[in-house]
Length: 304
Image (tube, rainbow, N blue to C red; front, side):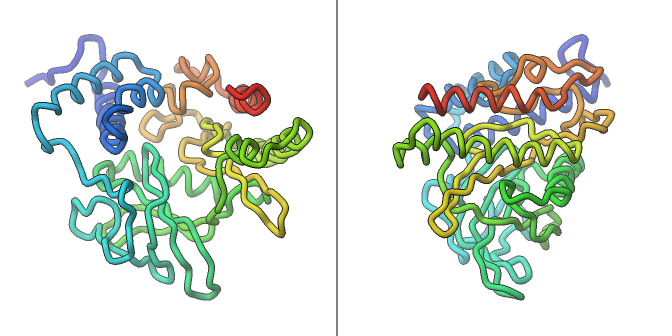
């Protein structure tokens, strides 16, 4: 029996599109209801996927909580509440070896980020990123592995450092990295009312971190203020680039199942034209990140 799919779409392409739809819908359900539709348009550049997600959200209004999951991000997470949504056995760990979960601090399309604490061999705050239980699968594992390996190749003061990578008792990939305790770069600049020269200096440090990644043949592909945090060390602001979840190795031939092929990944507002409409030949290079940095710089200087 043939599958019911739009005409002209191949099996793998259709399956990837359905996975992206499920991922987008899962994210939207964690956003306040009044922001959900705007969130869909901001998060995804594929018009058809957005329309399907909007239709599912509209249908959900008449289905009660059938599609929803506990919005633990709105109430916080303690080490006794468990990890993620607890929808599968083995996903309720509050410890990962020498690391203890403390609270949920953020989430993206592929996973959730928790603030944790390392007890041995040193005591320090850490960030722990774990794949969503609803999205765990062979494709997700490969994409998450890309992020883990990308971070392992990076060593720069303006890039969040990787400490450890492994899998949970339930089989989901996770990694532990430097916890960046600071706001997005635009919020930091506005909060401290920084002048032009100070804003440019912070931005130059971000560029140095991105250049470090580019010299190691890595693209970030999702550079935006929320992925550019500003920590403070001895009273001095230190910008940190975080979340290489959709990074693409420049020497990679491209693979849709790992998020490095011709599918559009990123945040539309900050994506270059070629990133919004990637070609099968794969024409993305460092200029893609430079474009995103240009948008960030414009917002830092113009305010919008």
